[in-house]
Length: 247
Image 1: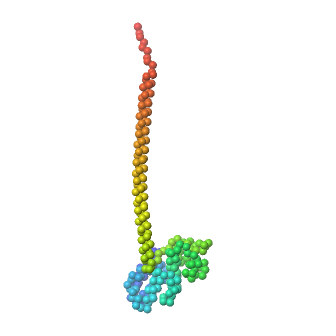
Image 2 (image 1 turned 90 degrees about the vertical axis):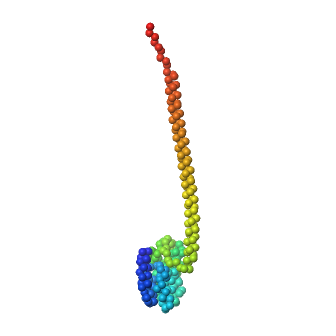
Image 3 (image 1 turned 120 degrees about the horizontal axis):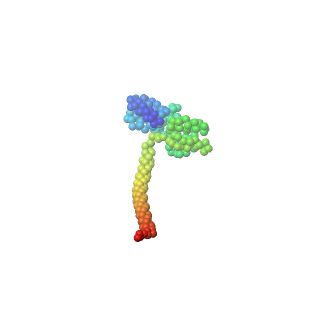
């Protein structure tokens, strides 16, 4: 998915840069927001060629681009009067992005909420949309819970980060970084303690081995002494031979 998206983005960036007409730029943006493999649009905002749309009647296409970068189907319905009318492929894309936004925010998505957000009239249609248009495309992974009537999110791809949410994202990353640094300190302390315990165990083992060797040496020495003592006692107990005198 990422490779196809990167290729699609590269294709449309080149088309945008090479377009010198506001009308052509508008058609490129419509084509890009309709493409099945493109779900990230923030790269367009860094292109200076798009700025020429601001002073024309086609400036609404910049608003449309922001909608696909950060918005949802509900956002479009609330602002449809000042936005271009969407094509069927664009409507599908925006509904996919709506599911992606919800899946990135909540771990459990009730069917009732999803049907309301997507303008879907029944559960069967909703489940087909989640499977065919969201899960097969790699946008989300999860489980359709028929008993609880909800979609349990296991994975959600990333969307463009809205400038309004940049501060919140920075704070989240800062909190994560702080927690990671604290965890690193704890791990380093544990490593030091583990090394110290290991050294203590090595000293204990060496001491035990030395004591064991000393005991063995003492036992060997004691065994030799006993054997020598018994040998000497045995010699003392042997009867003396009688001398025979011959006349």
